[in-house]
Image (cartoon, rainbow, N blue to C red):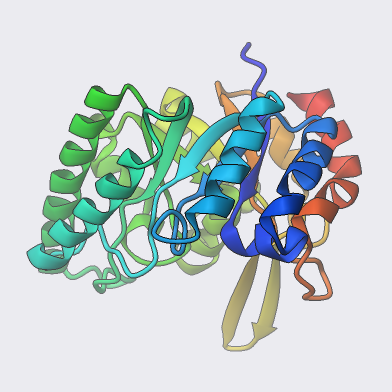
Length: 299
């Protein structure tokens, strides 16, 4: 059984909120590493590495110098790698690869997470023409990302989204043969469960087990965070990226389910406390003390 790397997601906003300046990045980075998190999935979404390169490079260099492992979350805002509009898809793939190339090669990167996404309508009543076009576009982008992966030696993991094309298990399943790796986001999947699959399974945990079984060994990365459900009938809104243990999910049950699969990396991607406050990244380990203990028990 593989013992997964326990990691934390690092985004520009959480770093700036934690340290405020480049000079303090080494101090707060050491605090995180001392808490036992050896893997850092760093988002290179705007403004990193488009601008503010100094703080970005200080962060990466400090992680490496202190024994931290680096993964990347590819740019996604304003981009749509599965858009059926070819100009949008083509520009999106160019932006992603250009910015990955600024980092990969200079640093040892364990994997990259990408959103193979489109906002084109593919809801409960599936519009076949839309579905087929989005699949066609996704296959093109996945092929181009795979070619980049072969050149760089860094695996690309496709992440499921809470809504849109990649919220559908059926969409991801159609791409499975071409997909090297899946990054299964358990918080995002809760939204998909509520929107698409609640009537199909006995509960969320049964649905999660089925999703993991469907992709089996391709699920190498898991993003773990909690969710809060705002139930304003007839609608439900799901707030995700909540600290594990402060929402509706039983993270111990999730970890126990994960222990039955060959997951290699479990990343906490949480920024919000149960009262809605944004948690400083430097304070996150204190919020995760109990969670960290249970990670050691199950994984």
